[in-house]
Length: 185
Image (cartoon, rainbow, N blue to C red; front, top):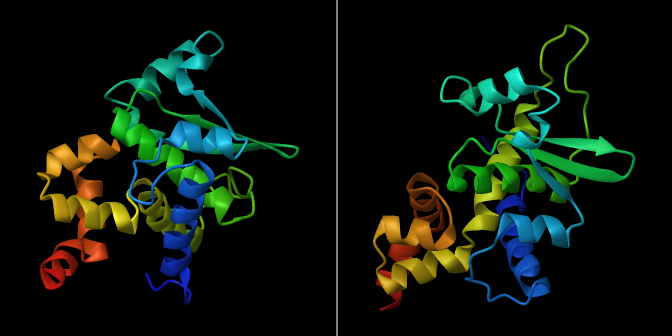
């Protein structure tokens, strides 16, 4: 996917700005719950709906149904609410919540859940942007370089930032962190 000109720079800048607003260093881990609170977005676990919809929640949080629902942003007037599948690992939950916050930060317009044909509304361009932006928030450019400078093992770095090893590896790769550290030495 080719992003619009300046998109990746915008993602890095926003990542820095949010950390600064929260009083964090540019390379600090960024908690999705704290970020949501800062952005005045309510975050609710899927399991909070278990009393009303026990079969659906049990299925979606089980190993059998987990891949069918990660998170969604619901717009209630001007209030934004993220419902996330807390049946996923904490690292996956963090990525799911940050993905949804990315849609909001990028000012993607809300859409009905389903189109006229009854199928899920899906805009590949908007999803690709959020798929890039969310990880850039969780592991900033500066964080990736700091991980490379410190020579952290992948799993340790992922644990420190509350992300999966796959997300951490992706951010190390796309930022060129290892190369940047080796050429700076």
